[in-house]
Length: 277
Image 1 (cartoon, rainbow, N blue to C red):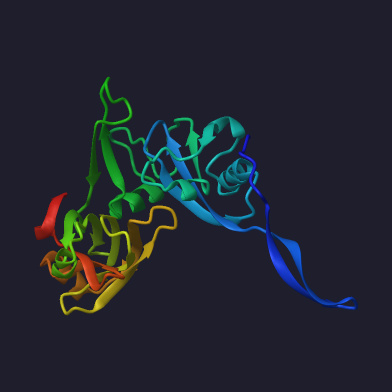
Image 2 (cartoon, rainbow, N blue to C red):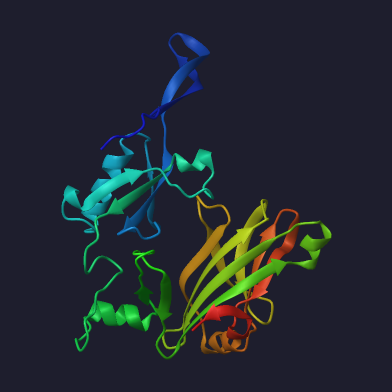
């Protein structure tokens, strides 16, 4: 695999104290930076696989080794290409720490199942369906990788996509903040998954899910690469929290240094959904 050469060390000044006395000298330290590996299969949109720390250099070999070690691939021939991200939302200074691995199409790949009619689901497939992780993809000659995509949500699993808007505080400052929150609530398991994409909030400091009583229900982690993306996965929530979600009393708030109380807000319940099941 061919990588663009990167400095594996950084120059710095160190203060030495030895038999020769005390003095400042130049020295080199091993560099350590995050590396995000994204996966794409059969032309699908790349998705984040893992973020790991490493010394820059040989990133492609590291990515292949991780995929092999995690059982994603069995041989190097399954890797079609490894390249920098084409996503224009990724800032150039961050793109150097992202590698997109494209895999050859195959049936039964991780997170994707081919299920013929009248067959029994495996335990893994049944678990994925129960969590709302089954999708139907309709293809066409013009869009062979998928023109229409729908999420299959069984009874008890609610999937919503809700718009977020600028808070009064942000609007007063002239911020044109906007965003979308994708929420999946499993009423049976009592779990909540939320992904938020924001725009126009350059100084965002954090995001959280807020209950109807105004208390924080879950903090969302910020992506180390896509600075406008926040998420949390399978957070445990109570039965009353599920009821609050169904009643539209849960919301997402994105704070910023210019608007600490929330620059971007919006409900994530079914009534607030712009689309969903």
